[in-house]
Structures are given as structure tokens and as C-alpha cells.
Amino acid sequence: MTSRKLRAARVIAVAVAVAFAFAGCVGIPNSGAVNSVPAVKNGSDSSFADLPSRPPRNASKDVILADFMQAAKLPEGDYANAKLFLTTKAAQSWDPTKSVLIRQGSASTADEVDGSVSYTVTTNASIDANGTYLQQSSESTQSLSYGFEKVKGQWRISSLPNGTILPRTSFPQVFSQYPVYFFDPAYRYLVPDVRWFPVGSTADTRIVSALLAGPVAWLGNGVVVSAFPQGVTVGQAVDVRGTTATVDLSAEAANTKAIDRARMQQQLELSLQPTGITAVIMTARGAPLTTNAALSHASPAAPANGSPLIQKDKQFGFYPKLESLGKLSDEVVSLNGRAASVDHAQTRAAVLNKAGVWIASESASAPQLIDSRPGLIAPSIDTDDFVWSVPSNDASDIQVTGPTGGSHSVSSSIPSHSVVVSLDVSRDGTRVLIYLKTGGGPRLVVAGIVRRNGVPTSLGDLLDLPVSSADPVDATWVDPSTVAALGVVAGEDAVTSYVIGGTPGDPTTTTDGSQLVAGSDLRLITTAGEIQQLRSSGWQDINVVASMLATQQ
Image 1: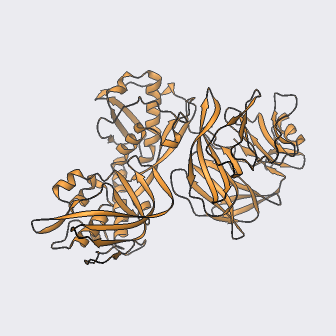
Image 2 (image 1 turned 45 degrees about the horizontal axis):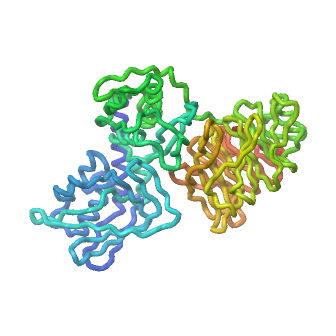
Image 3 (image 1 turned 45 degrees about the vertical axis):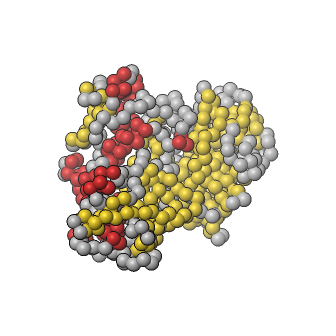
């Protein structure tokens, strides 16, 4: 199957999936009381013919509104099907891409005295015009007003809010996540910023528009950067032929340096890759932009070594043969630590023992104690060999120690009374994952790292992930856009993954987990020292007992 046919098939598949989802919705009864709209159910028997292809004749306002809500789930043709339910003026002014409100359960309607119909939903999430998934801390109720006029004797919607509304059950059938990529400030890594767009022919252009608009707010203040000049826009819709996309940019793109053009192209190619694009041609107002891809060498952060890095008896190395890291292994063993974080090059390690946090290095004659504060949690070492440490009872006192010595505080908006359970820096060095106990329950947060001349100085805005009410135990980075958290719910250990800027996965249960670590696979160590690995069938013991499971940065 050709790429173009494959892309078309994906669109049809989505339309069919939406048709099945539509089958669970029926027309809303016409009365002045609050009416219930049945929620969409997966697995309903239906066919493509069940799509409301056009407004039924002599339909009531409520039926027109119900069918419009169904039709608005299909974005093809600039929501052409949904616009059939609107007056001409409303169809011209309505912007369906402005936002998506994700409703929980059923909606309800009520006829208002001015002739409009109110549509009330319960929601805890939405998506903005740039595809950013916005998770609320709790559910809220929103009521939207829809005005009506008769056109040739038939009711049509004459006024309505911008955006669309999707049931939670239909959302994953219509929308897909697309990471748009930005650089770390040193241009060594490409960092994903997950967005959500309808699957189909409009996805390419919307991905590019989101990329040009810049990163989400919590990744601002220089946490990540873009090679595109400020103010550059998409000149016209992305033109896809086969697996090659031509992206026409505004005039500002023509005044860029060769290195910036190479980086721009790399951002575009990686961001468009999920839609089947393998090559990108850039133009500025139709004129080709020459690029040299070899000038940009950045890539997403690679996963850690596929083997667990453990300490067993008097050996520290990669399981199963306990392959040594040379002098570094000897130094780690000598510290008799209970937690360790090893850097990319496997030449330095931050180790926590009873005395505090130490730095062990191949190049140093002996390990050095760099933080002796009481109550320290497991340290993290970042891409530039800064060691992060913090006492569990004071979340506001995060400290970093540089590779040449010298420590200083990292400011943040984390409440000082929070108890810090874990702190882990991402492998690209741009973000930090922190698991907290607070008076209001657990918080799993991600924050961007603001650096000055490469030195971490502060954390940006906190992004709360929708963590459950579990008693927090540990959290870790799974990949550049996914984290996982280990918590105890009703006496049972549960590990849940979270897409940053997305939705949580289904929890998997284990027993007596004490620490969570990711490499090519997700692993944990139990309180008894048993190492378990997550498989498709669940957590499996790898038949080794260790005194420590180290984090590989």
C-alpha cells in the first residue's frame, strides 16, 4: 500500500471508529426540562451509515444539537459535515479547532426562555488550539449555550461557542498524541512536547503550527528552545506527496543561518514522523530553503543500558554477570550505599549512604562527601554531572553540586512543608520529576530546569500529573515523554505510567516495591532486595537478590 493510500486508510479507519462511537448516542428529547444524553459506549453494533450525514427534516432543536455533537467528532473536510447543522453565518464564524472539551459521562440539555438550548457537561480535561492537553485537578461542570434560527423552515444552530466537545470514550478513537520537538539550550537533545490532534489529513499542518507557536508554558523561560525565528508562521497548508512533506513558511524563515535551517528541518522531520512523513522540504513564501542536515547532530535522549545496574555482595555492575564499571564500581561498593545514580558516560556516580550524598569518580582518588544534611533522599545526576540532592522534609531546599565542586540552591515554587519522596532529572537534562506527599494528598509533578550558563538555578512552573490517591513510594522516567509512579493503594502496590501532557495508563500491581528504575524496561527492587521486571503479563522476578538497584542517567 502506498503512503498516500495508507494515510487515507487511517482517515477512513477513524471515521469508522467514530461511526461505532456515534451509535451509542441518540437524539435528545425535546422538552423544557433537563434531559439526559446517553454516553457513548465502546463496542456498539453500528455501521458507517449511522453517521449523521445531514440534518433530518423537521427535526427539533434538541435533535439538531445532538446530531451536530456527533458530526463534530469527524474533522475531515474542515468539519464540513458538522457545519451542515449550522446557519451559513455560524458555519463561517465557528472555529472548531479552538479547543476540545472532554466530557465525562452523559451531557444534559435544557431549553432556555430566549429560545437557545443549554448543553451542560462534566469535565476534567480539555485541549487548546495548539493541541496542549490540560488536566484539571478536579471535575467541573460547564454549561454552553447554542442559539437557533429557522432556515427554510428547518432549525439550524445560529450561535455557538468555538471548539468541539468529545465524550471521554470517543477521545482516543478520534485524537492521537503527537510529540513536537524542541532543543535543550545546548542543542544536544531534542525534547518532546506532547500534543493532541485529530487523526487525518489536517494533522500535519496542525503539528507544524503548534511547533512554530513554541513550547507549552511550563517548558518556557529557556527550558527548551526552538530554531525557528520568532513570528514565523505556516504560509499555507502542509503539502504531502507520498512520504515527503513540503512546509511553506513565512518570509522570516529566509533570513536564517545554515545551522538554524538544519535544526529547523530536524524539528520538522521528527515532529511529522508519526504521520508517516520521512522527508521534509522547507520553502519560504514558495522559494526553496537550502539545508544541510549534517550540521545538526541532536537526537532524543537514548534509553539507558538494557541491563539492570545492581550491587550484590561486594560487586557493583550490570546484571547478570555483574559486569564491572572498573574503578567506579570499586568506589561505589566502598560507600556501602542504599541508592546511586550513574551518569551517561558511566564514569561518575552520586551515592547516598548514612553519612549523606557522595560523588564517586574514575578521575578522583577517592569519593567525596558533597551533602551531609540529614534525611536526604536518593540523589540524581544530570547530563552535565550536576548532582541533585534534597532532604525529604524540606522540598524547598533542593541543592545541586557541580562536577568541579561548589553547591548552591535551586529555587522553586514547591511548598516547603511537602515531603519529597523522589527526585529524578530527565536524561536530556531539561526537566525534573518530583514525587511529593502533601497535606492534600500525593503530588506527582514535572518542572522545567532553568539554567544560567549551564548551571541549574531554578525550576519553572510545576505541571501536576493526575496521580491517584496512592501513598507515594517512588517515581522514575520511562522515556523522554513518559514517567511511572509506584504507590500503595489499600495495601497493594501499583505502578502507573503517565504521558507528560497526556493521560495515565492502566496500573499494574506488584508486591513490596521500594524503588522504581527504568532502562530499556521498567524495573523495581522490593524491600527484600528482589529485582522485578515489567513484562506484558505483569511483574516478573528475575531471580536475583541485590542490596541496591542503581539509576542510569
